[in-house]
Amino acid sequence: MSITVTGKIQRRDIGTGAWALVTDEGVTYEILRGADKDLLKAGQAAKVTGQVREDIMTAAMIGPVLEVKSYEVI
Image 1 (tube, rainbow, N blue to C red):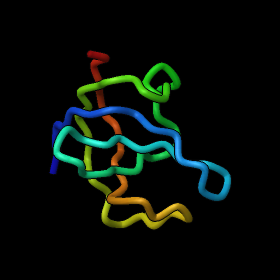
Image 2: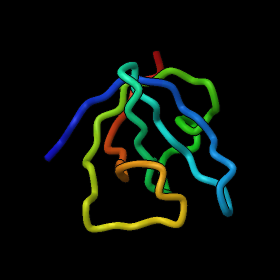
Image 3: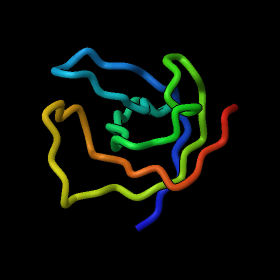
């Protein structure tokens, strides 16, 4: 199922590091590795469309894993 969420990008220093999108409502999604480098800038606001991957676990385990399909910097 595809979702669209708006929030800020954060870099988390857990293990080798992880990227997160923290929504305006306070929900944290872990961004799946391989996302566009232009999206992955700490503090940047973005509107992201993607799929929550329930079949993937990560070392960071900071929230549901979000596979980014498209995004818009806002």
